[in-house]
Length: 287
Image (tube, rainbow, N blue to C red):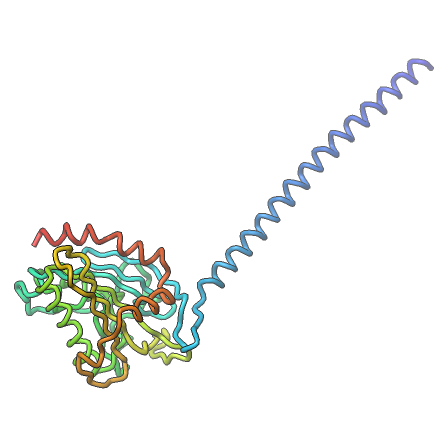
């Protein structure tokens, strides 16, 4: 009888230990599961907030701001391309005074999709057919990069193309681009920044809903050349309204450009593009 009691007592103690151990393991499992689920929920919230933060908003003037875009780097220019709007939003290039009028290759190339993006993420040349809009070069125009075939070919990537009204593309933009080349020849090299302005309620074309910009900002920064103390940056705004504007009428205060740029361009995207400038300098030496 005594042996039975001892065995029973031992069994109860063992069961209590086992239950405690099982309870402890169960508690750990519950805590682990809870932590995992909480982390999943947290990740979902962060992801949602991130998407929310990158949704375009607009300012008091109806201009879209906070536009998310992907930085695409090339040998002589970079663009930040919005797959939602099917437009380059911000771009950087450098014009070299000894190259902008060198060779002036007459051959022009076909517009090609950018292989770094899927076709549904970008406009392709067929989308512009019978749209009423020209395939307008963005920050790297063909006339400024026709000193060699490879740089020229790069300018025909569709991520460097934006919808421009006929007279805007063939008159107003040409005047501003020519001014950039003149500045490059005068100051040896010029940093070019271009910014696309798209306003709330923007119109679209094609089944891809390609956004039609309201206009374009150009910033010609002379600060790359230190030997010209009195050199000033020049800025222009070109309305995309099919009108032919004289150069002086498009000229703007660069403080206005800087104010607008800060509203549209993410700082990290801008820095990612500006960090490419040493590469452009080195590449220019090949020609």
